[in-house]
Length: 158
Image (cartoon, rainbow, N blue to C red; front, side, top):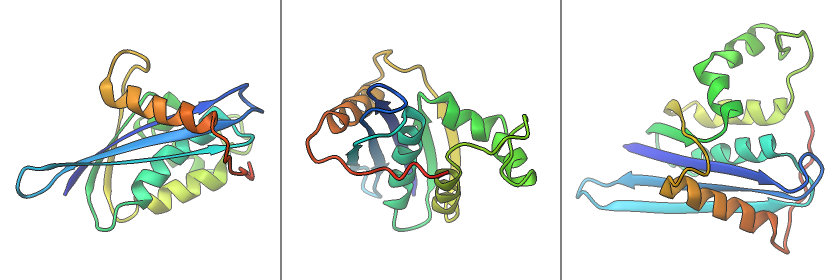
């Protein structure tokens, strides 16, 4: 099954304010019917990068069987990690970046890699706030969640 996963993260007062993520999954069944699932949640205190990662993680974790997934994101942080092979260097260097410092958000990167395991995943960057309907919807989900009342606690552990 081919799935397109659209994602976005938001943080108010980044890096120490409330934030949220939004994810929209699109897939077409054998009868040609489009199916859409949306996910979002808000957090009391987080960062934009953490929310960008969470959007992709939650979308991948929602898939119940192996899929070919195209992740469409306006986050260079997420897309470049794979398209520029940063993740390969981080793994090779025991989660140290090119400056020999610990990679930020390691726990979420590990969770993302685990969520990717059963799938064939590719990452596509798109310009944010440029009128792309699904990206705009993800942004709406993320910002609405960040501004919501029932915010979760992000451990923000590395």
